[in-house]
Length: 433
Ligand SMILES: *Cc1c(COP(=O)(O)O)cnc(C)c1O
Image (cartoon, rainbow, N blue to C red; front, side):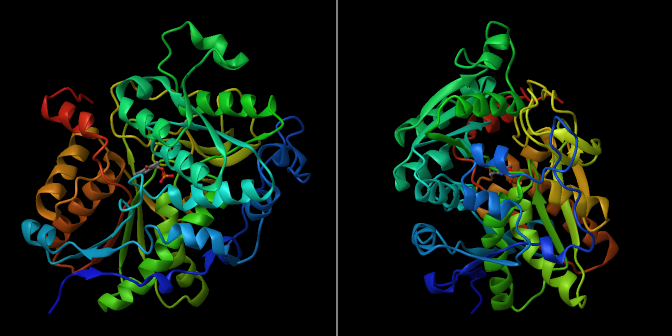
């Protein structure tokens, strides 16, 4: 009997993370030193922000990076995560497509973000760091880091984008429940924050990153943590796709289309890179790979591919990426997450080389798709994940018209049970474009 649920045992968890760098068809452009505009060869400035182990992972060319035992033990609190076939969604759409999803909403904070938060907190704790400082938008990353720091004995300070701090108070409560200090950004705690503090600035991830970095540079016991974009973050998220490879084998099918929502790109890369890497190495399979973003923050579909800063104040190294500009402020009305101005350099590179397609959707269509998914599959998707759902529904309907039988796999990277205000705004007609 088919249950359409594919679960691995704890012992089947991957023992190493997968790094796509050695499998790239063409090497990446290096990060640049912001002062000299020359390749950043000396890791010293990075070592002030990150522990040595993570700087090494950031620059690593190794295909496999062993997962420390202590990280595996914490992963086992919610991993391996399940993979489901969306039979009820398929039936409701009357599509010949087969639709599968990897569900990361089973983590304690409801998204994929603990996969890297736990790893980052572990390496910082190993190197004697006392406090991790970070930014958060809607609060998913701040919650995951607050959780991971608590489990590994570190303190957490979080700069939360001001508009979300006021619109999403429950995520602040989650962070505080884990013992984190949370500040609305722009704040009066940093020089950069004070320049904007009295204004009615809604804040942005770029501003909050600048504040977090400034905070770290003033506290020798603190280091910085980033929840997306960087190579080491995408590396940690590879557990998603490594598990999904085994689960699709259990299901007896190979996906033909891979789909994920993209903010900075970590959940998308986490699902996609292990599949793409295998196809780059063996050349015996190719996938259609689709990254989905909001129309109001379209870094892949509308951004430029160039060097840019990761933060608004220009404190980070310059990264070659698809970007809307480091001073980008997303529209206030935007409710669907995925608000970062840039895209992970690894994803930008593969997009530029033609291995990845991108689509952008307006928010009402995204929430409509999210609700359709809830009513068929039972899980209310995080608004970010609903972007992927929207693309999958469109692909499934297209298949009905073209008579193709694609096997679609997507990342349901989080649940939306702390995003119900946005769903209510959608119901009440308060989401305009
Ligand atoms: C943070 C978050 C995202 C966006 O970040 P990526 O690095 O692009 O994955 C997407 N979905 C959920 C549920 C998130 O919490």
